Image (cartoon, rainbow, N blue to C red; front, side, top):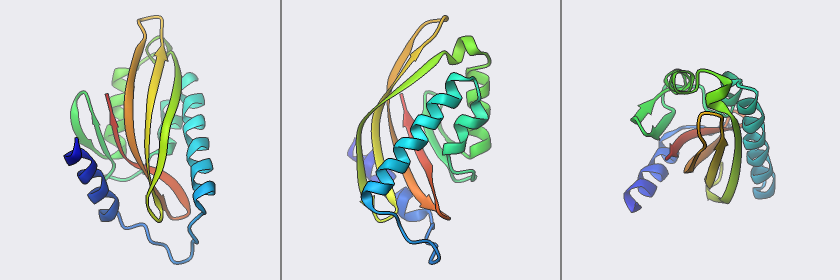
Length: 148
């Protein structure tokens, strides 16, 4: 588990998002913005709007997602995986996030621990996630997601 955390921290430092024209938000502002993104993702998911759900992610080939299919790279691949895995509203169902912790890693980067609860006609699904948010060009984006 320590290896995963070390890899996530290395990922944060490897994603160059320093924009001298953007002041970094305060910790309170950052956490509020991150919570709003996650709430928007819930709404999009619950409307079977997978592209809307993906707006919280960094639209870049360096986006990392670690899930049941192993490690994948890129926004397009993550979207395709969601579209294949959740092709209809019966599969997407109703999503509810439970945020356990939002912690600052460094200026402009936060680690989020939480749970997801998915109520569906085809069977419920529950799990946990760890995501890394990074402040990129004036916006908070998920740069790494580990869900299981």
